[in-house]
Length: 106
Image (tube, rainbow, N blue to C red; front, side, top):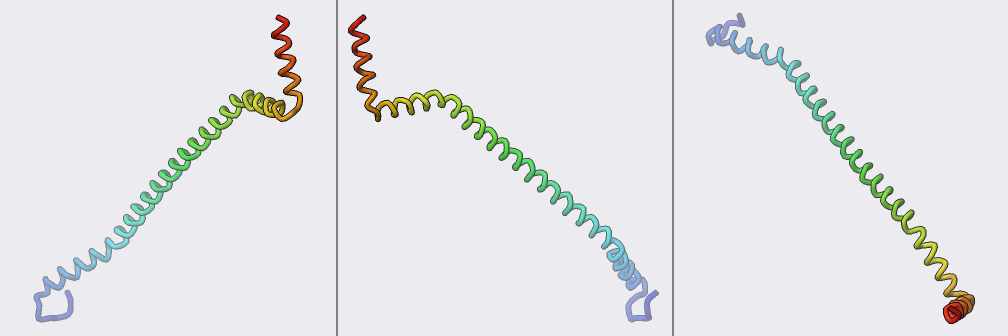
């Protein structure tokens, strides 16, 4: 029992026991809070990793699409480059004359 007080001894004992219960469960509550915080942090880590994988997949798909578009347009680009070279040179007039003559001879 506690020191003699004007209150009933049973009341002071009950309050003391309650305080000891709170102090005794403080470490358990702290560990529970730490575990909850750890679980939350790990879940955010997994969400960020999933989002990073999704972004990487989108970038890879875009890069693949660009590569396929370049492969498909390489023939067209080569043809347009050759056409522009012919248009800038004096040989285009000669080629046009040869084309017209070949059609006349048919």
